[in-house]
Length: 415
RNA sequence: GGAGGGAUGACCGAGUGGCCGAAGGUGCUCGCCUGCUAAGCGAGUAGGGGGUGUCAAGCCUCCUCGUGGGUUCAAAUCCCACUCCCUCCGCCA
Image (cartoon, rainbow, N blue to C red; front, side, top):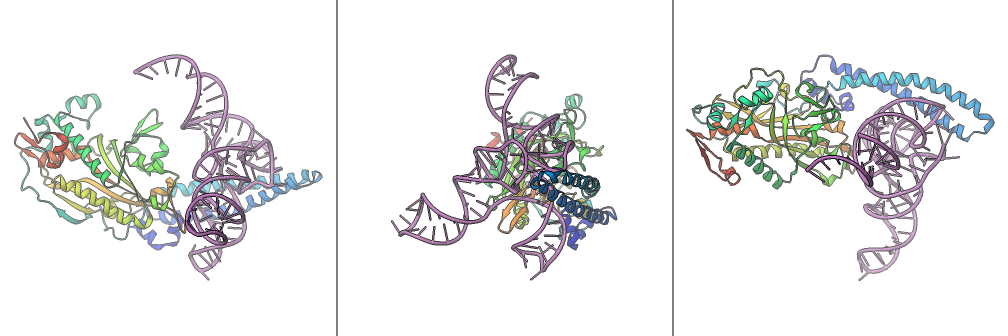
């Protein structure tokens, strides 16, 4: 949720919002609704004040005065209740509007849409051409995935990962988590089923409701990322200043409906409804969040680089940031079969956008402040396998990346 | 699944209708005292929103005693629902 005071008083805030191409007039509507609400609030509070005084006097009044005073206070109460209804309506109206307002884009974010991200750097050597088999065909050939029965039991975009691929998957998780622990991240295996409230406070509802699976008659929802439970880890809490940054590494399966992606990425397990992911989530002091963002990006880069995958870093443009991010970097890895870079990981700085609803603060010398939250993919396991299968296939052999060998116990798989 | 008990500030804990945003204690901060430390003495110390302000201190005000409703002129206190915790019984491992 955005900072209404900043929207009112800081022209840069409004500019950052409008760069995300919100509906024309939305910002003015919000400002109008906010103004109205505050006016009504002042009236209600003045009435409550009178009511409070009147009630306190009754407590002190002599017995023979009480009846009159109670009658007067009762009249005040009726008036107050009418105004409170107006206030409730104003609150609802403002809330409905304000939830549609995205986090302002950082001034450094480039303008434009999906294709307008700015490539900050390209790292690694791309192979000259496509591999003999694309990742889907290679995985088939090697017996690394089972799709026929998975689709029968669960539907399209489901797959079983099988045989040595499972050991590579576990190796990836172990290697990445070990590395994050060394970087000061606290590992967490969180619940993947959460209540609606957790979805709302993490900022996923109402916007992304269609992307989420419902369970138990709508009581619970399967998370699309462990970012959701990790953001709930400190809801309503106040950090001591020296407890920040607090870094967490979530390890969990992720579930996504992938509504609206029919026909896209139908090969292999590039885009599936269920996958495992190691996610970084950081609570940072407001003045330290940009540095923390760079740090998360550096971790992502080192993981991809150590896997020997050629990648580029993209500074995502305003139109592709999503509602919550003020700034976002994607790591795109070269997918030889498609001859282009595809997204593997991503990291965002939400600033105080999500902390505002979560009520997560840090105690400071000059009062308490909302924390900043950041998140980044350490390893989207299934999709990482996809890239490995293309970059590490050698005829009928899958070569295990060197950094993973201590974890797999084998160097290669040959069929 | 059945029966009962509970949720109060950073923490412990008192408070069953009004002078209670809340006794007392611990912790923390500042000061005094003391070779140092400990002890002792004194003062301060919840959060969030709105208004006002040289948006800085301050001042005014509202809300918050698990969450949301209700009763009442007035609710930490009474009623209802929900969430969570504990105890006992049953069940399962």
